[in-house]
Image 1 (cartoon, rainbow, N blue to C red):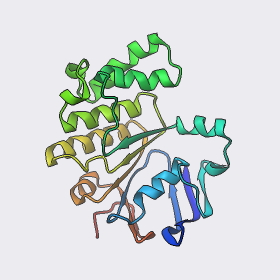
Image 2: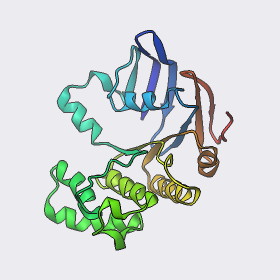
Image 3: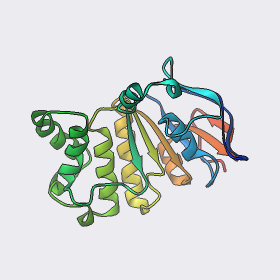
Image 4: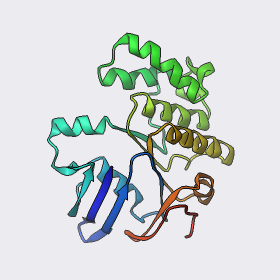
Length: 225
């Protein structure tokens, strides 16, 4: 599904990633771990074509992501839902409206929005908070809302960049369990984290980065740093 072929990314004289070779298959749950500055976020930005490799190529199926036209790149990015550490919710819209906005942005009709949003709110256990604004939600609720917004368009891949970084242990566990549930439904999930408990709870493939290089790739890994 996603394949990194000898990818190196440099910023001026600094090497962010070096000689990366990764293959992620459809339906996998992959944790990318490493200390701050190891290259985790750069790797996800390369998948989204927000950054371009200095050397090598990144493929989605058989397509070189970084050779897509602007129009095709937009279509490709719709296959990916992104969850951020800082939520990035629209502060002046309710929980319902935050999710609906993601559907409106890709041209979905009101009928589809009215049908789909309640189902996703139920999936993330926020039905009772549908009319609440982000400032009325807890940190865990905000992140579950961000996940709901990411999955409402039924993407093939979810990329979660340090999604539990601002959460307490209980909310962290809830978010991880939700991502596992989404993965069980067939969506590929890629999560970056430096939280040992998150990795040990997932109990799936772990790719460890250190100074921009892959130092471990374990099918059923644990946090080894």
